Length: 260
Ligand SMILES: Nc1ncnc2c1ncn2[C@@H]1O[C@H](COP(=O)(O)OP(=O)(O)OP(=O)(O)O)[C@@H](O)[C@H]1O
Ligand SMILES: [Mg+2]
Image 1 (tube, rainbow, N blue to C red):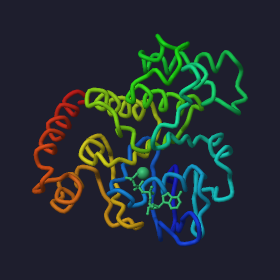
Image 2 (cartoon, rainbow, N blue to C red; image 1 turned 45 degrees about the horizontal axis):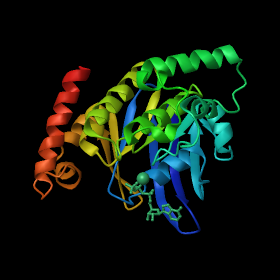
Image 3 (cartoon, rainbow, N blue to C red; image 1 turned 135 degrees about the horizontal axis):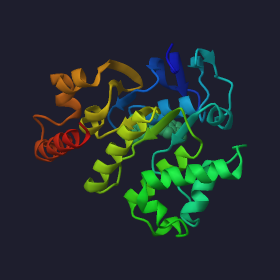
């Protein structure tokens, strides 16, 4: 049974549906990426999973159980953590305070929470050495690391990462993608919404293509990477973006070499 399933899901913001008839599944222990252009509906899909948006129709199933009616807070307690697009960390609070907020509502004892802070600091050494520093002093990439670390504070089974590479310097992007692989290897299931399709597919097990609110293609990430249709539309091959794409292809190769 998949860890999470969407069945014939229709969802939107104010009446008119944005996503229609979405079927998607996430199996425990895999990285699944959502590929799609600006405004295709990736973030909307992520919000429907974390509970920020209630579906108009269809089902959200966790461990085969319908969770449509569960609030975001309850879904968090069930193990679904959402790292939103644009990071949304609290710039005026310290790193430690931001991490505390990630464990908000958690009933485990202080020692268990301290262990979790220690674990995320081991994963993100740059945060560990600056726990008392105000988060607003950090670079965009470091703030993204903090947003992911905050998401991990709830000990999620499923981590929803919305555009983790957006506005992040290339070197740190590589680190973020490496971290995502490590988190998957630690047993966390990951849904990765990314415009950076090449790098996202390079680390993913499976992928879905979202176009105008519909899923138009799905399959093993390798198959999608090799698909001429995907290459043309999302990897920039044969377009004016070819030069920067060659760059990102090189980076994806380097990344793969680092991971495997
Ligand atoms: N809060 C909102 N209220 C109404 N419509 C919205 C809202 N947020 C997004 N939309 C609309 O929903 C559609 C899908 O947007 P969404 O943010 O899910 O796309 P996306 O694939 O995540 O895009 P991007 O790559 O830019 O992040 C767009 O037409 C967008 O204008
Ligand atoms: Mg988005």
